[in-house]
Length: 149
Image (cartoon, rainbow, N blue to C red):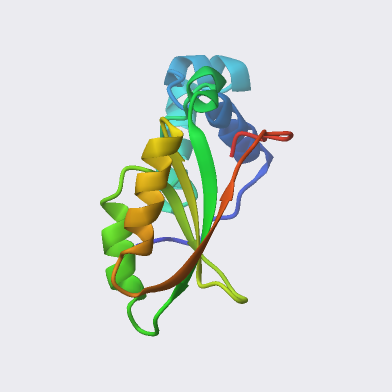
């Protein structure tokens, strides 16, 4: 259960440090923040318990990301089948992210593949998912801003 939790400046500094290196040792974080290890550990546990820290993840370096062909895929989905469509998309390793949205489209996908042939095949599989009414693909040519989020 997520508890109510007010983030203070120390929490913001701790979250920023974890954002730079989620694998940082508690002792390293404690030194950086000028706090006791037990205090840092307790704050992390509270932030996790409150759902503010939802998990820890891997972020690939630019060298790996640059070698992938990326696309944004806009989907229109038949009414009342979003859960089934999401279940099928989740099984596709090329689908990095899926967002529901408002407007003309129902879902936005971030898709990546190792080659144009792999991307083409993934786009075909996405379009063939039962419940996908239509799709529009936007192939990424270059990245001009990347805040790493």
